Image (tube, rainbow, N blue to C red; front, side):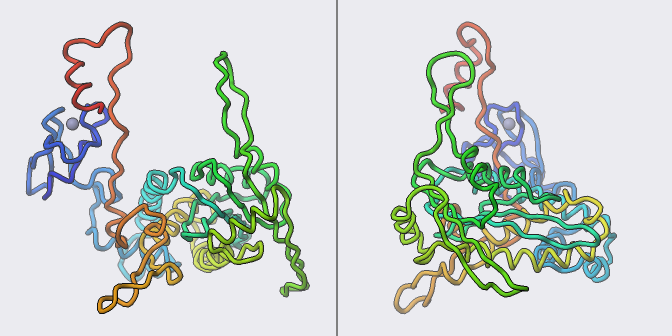
Length: 370
Ligand SMILES: [Zn+2]
């Protein structure tokens, strides 16, 4: 047990979320329980992870999560490990929601995206069609998130654009999409910032100036592509070309990178959507599944095109995942590490009240609010 790597999860504790402050001690080795000396509360090692209060071994949950994320039919897992179908569904929800929190904590941070590609996929289930819209940062191949819906409409696209907006800094950005008209308005709505004017009420929203939208429209005859039109729907082609070059995303406007990722998600989801009764009844159960797949892709899966030449005499190549390329983590995570990652609560804030802080509050503020 390593109390130095632990933080207090108690939401009312001034030391919450702080690591290496010597406030955590071992409370019980047998129960793997720690204690915070500031608030006096004890907590188990697994709090805030899908393992919390799990009656099965952690190793089994890791295996099940890996199988689900790679498109193994639910029934196969049930049969192989003698688990109840409801247990597997419950784990899928648990690990998926955990991955979503990890994603929001680590990936949804503003960074210079340079070039993003977005697309929607249609997944056929039993008598139901599900749409999944996703986005990818081209230079690092980082999956930026996705939205699940039963209809391919402007709400789906707007929700996706808001996801990208959370990951973006207000810097020159090229967004490559297909010919769906909803994109233009959704991008215009999502990429705006409030302009403070010192007055009361809602401030005016100003559009980001350097957003360039490239559209790649494919015409099909049967399943074959017979014609591709590439055009700028907003912004200028010269800047778009520079951004393409900077991101290593080819020489022409394209959506090839997101299509590659879509193909992976589609094949894995198609199996799951067809083989599971519970998924079909409620497409919302697909959302945790999408985060599980996306997080394993971002954090745990080596990407061949991201590897770097290694040192002479040592390894020939240094393997990297999209999250390493984006500077979010420093080594390839195992699925166990992903599931064990605890998201620290936000820094403690002193209670708001009128007048000066009291004698008891002052030392707490001095120590924990720096
Ligand atoms: Zn505490």
